[in-house]
Length: 305
Image 1 (cartoon, rainbow, N blue to C red):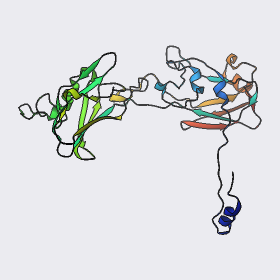
Image 2 (image 1 turned 30 degrees about the vertical axis):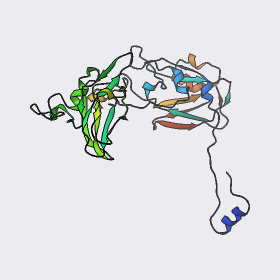
Image 3 (image 1 turned 180 degrees about the horizontal axis):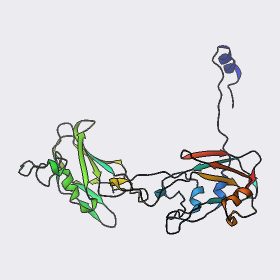
Image 4 (image 1 turned 45 degrees about the vertical axis):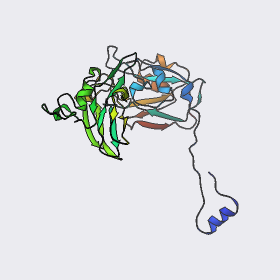
């Protein structure tokens, strides 16, 4: 905490403007980062060390969340987790817990923006590269093509309106992309429009579409075409609520739980019951429910490992 000094301080004070104070949190060393972690069981590859890796991201798919083997082939009715500090019986102050987060699967949305000084005309083609020399290109697409197969006209003589000439048809011809939904809206600048493509049949992050310039011919002066990702996709095999599917495999919360501080001896690994662990603890508290993050403050003078 500090204030302004000298004449500026006096001027502010005597004119009724008050004082300037600066407040900041006292951030001490995170003792858990150097600790050795263990847990009762491990499920889905959620090893104990993930809980103290310094990353508080709560989505399991990003590899920073632990998980016991509860409700799997190795059922764990009383799961526990512990971290043993590098030094014996050091002061324990604040303990912060971060719970797991639910993450629904998300369909990716990419946009194709076409604009010019006047109504855009011409054709374009899109390219998608899946890596390992697996690249696909669409047929030519009219810059004024209808969005979906439902909007196609069987006997239309206008290119971009006939059967198989919609943006949806062009993209779904690349079978690996699966089913797509396409909408159209006006562009924010110049004259033109934006095709928004939602990838319904491709789980996860879709490779970025690019313009296949070898098959693209924009006829209007000042015409330009851009492809962007509006929303990245997430496959999320752990919490997949997409397409009305049920929550699968990974679930639950760390709450309610007991949080305990113990000394080096006896080894917590050798406790036969929760009651034994509580009796041996030098400090404990029961967390019944909480938001994703809960902060606990141990009693003054608590020492543990």
